[in-house]
Structure formats: structure tokens, C-alpha cells
Length: 254
Ligand SMILES: [Zn+2]
Ligand SMILES: [Zn+2]
Image (cartoon, rainbow, N blue to C red; front, top):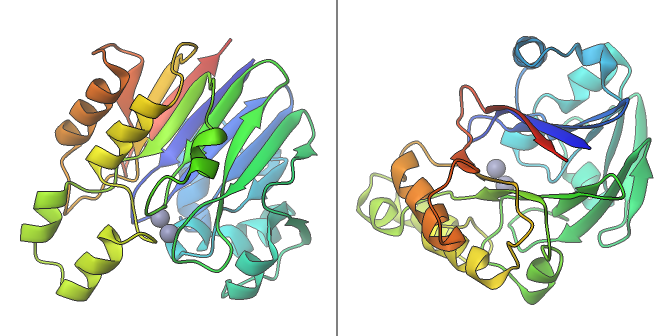
């Protein structure tokens, strides 16, 4: 059985909790230590009970809290060399380097990192497994490559970026250069791209589909959720959204 929950998801901070047996991994931590502790407590967790922090890439909304959290609670950190080099604070109590596309284990959790096209030094996203079930987390990428899609086959659960609505971004207040960055091949996924990904992967085993990293300025949670409904070809309660303040509560894959 895998349990997972979100502490919050969006450009102001991301952190996802994944638990198998006694192993608890925090994927990314874009919140301050105090805020992380508060959000963990909401989910019934103490920060000191975490087994590790795994980092996808060096953007602040994913890494800002990692150094301080690692030092305060003596937590080992897993990340790529590129992410570590590019990180402003890489003074972790213990550092483990990830090779993208090379699987590894932390306690009872099997992790498959895979490369994604995003404007960071060496970003990767992950599939987590307990040996029976597979949870994919896919965020912060400009487009889905065949390599990305091949990692998402037959998942039991998926958290998928739905960053922006194309028209809202283009008509919104962002400067032109930022609009180009967000919508470019190394930026973020819009609702239609996420919908297209869902139509390309096998969803027959999917128990939970969650939309995440929804832009507060350039998207509406309703648009994003509708895109997921279309992609999954159904409007069911197993399709829902992660938000910036609340994330989402524990989901169980069994
Ligand atoms: Zn991000
Ligand atoms: Zn990013």
C-alpha cells in the first residue's frame, strides 16, 4: 500500500508526502521550516519522522525549505548533481546523488527518476513504487517527451501539472518574456497538454488522478479539473485537484 498527500502545490511552494510502511519521503519542499512543520502536522506527521527529502530541481518553489529542514531535523537529501550545484543552499546533513533514469531505493520505497524538459540544470520527476503499486508525480516540464510518457505507463495514481490556461496566460498581465518562458518547451504544461498526456497513457488501473501546480494568475482550478475529466474521459471522484494552501489530504493506493 502507498499513501500520499500534498502539503501544497503551486508557484508559492510545493511538497508531496509519500509513505510506504515506515518509510516517509517528502518530495520537494518549497515552504519555510515553520510552514512545513505546520502543514505536516495537518497530515498527522512530525518532520522528524521523515526518512528523506527528495528534490526534483532547484527552483525555489521546490527547494527553498530543503536545506533548513535537512539541518533542523537531520534529514538526508536525494537530488541530482546538477540540482545540487545549482541550489543556493546545498548544505544538507547528508547528500545522496541521483542519476536520472537510474532507479534506487529509500527504505521500502522504490524510486524511478526520469529526465524532463524544464529550464533547470538537471531536473527529474519520479515514479514511486512499493513493489505492487506505482505513483507518478509529473510537474514542471514544458512538454511531454516519449521518454516521459514511457515512464507513465500503467500507473495506479498520478499527480499531474496543469499549470496554465493558454488564453489566460496570453491575455494576462505577465510580461511578454515570462509568457514565452512559461509556454515554451522548457516551461510548464498547460491544461490542454495535460489532457493530451492523459489520452496517451494507459489509465485502466488509475485510482487517483490529481491536478497540481495550478497557476493562481493564469489558470482556474475549474478549467484544470475539466481538462483532467476530458483526459480521463470521465467525471469521477477519483479525479481532483491539489491547491496552494491545502494541497490535498491522504490518498491511499491499495
Ligand atoms: Zn515549480
Ligand atoms: Zn520549475
